[in-house]
Length: 198
Image (cartoon, rainbow, N blue to C red; front, side, top):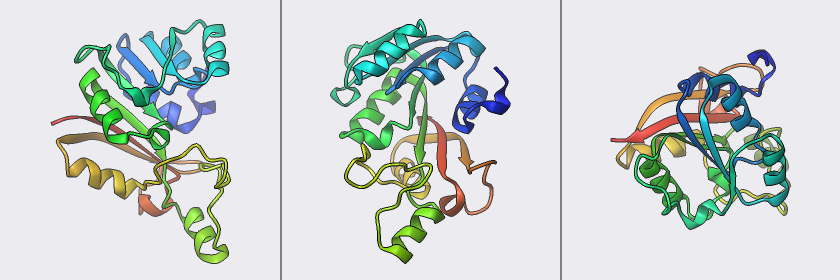
């Protein structure tokens, strides 16, 4: 599959992950990203997903996926068990964000975190001009059906990491059609970070 037709976050993650590495995808959904990494980078991949229908989709793709809630922790995994732990579009949905991040940084040598930027200009405009909870391409849910529990911005996540022993190794700010290099907290729809323990 050509990388030109991939979702922008999947394309960036594909660039980051080293060939032949071990990957744990937390909240892997239907397995689209994990299948891509297995196919293109020959990773040894495992997913954890809570939604049963999504698990069936993963099994149909031939993926190794466990039914589980990442909020309950990753105690069954040893320290450094994976080269990468991926939390793409799932961190904002967990109940115990700090526990999930701490466990991910323990289990993975590196962690890839991707999330919608709740401070994007489109969201700001809907709140300011219309006085409503935003619904955008990166936040496609109405306030009463959203799975999101944490409404973080790119700046929030950077501040969070800087206040803790978390090193940001790489970052990418993704817009609708291209990477964002100018005021990403305002103009990027998605923040993507490669982090590790200091």
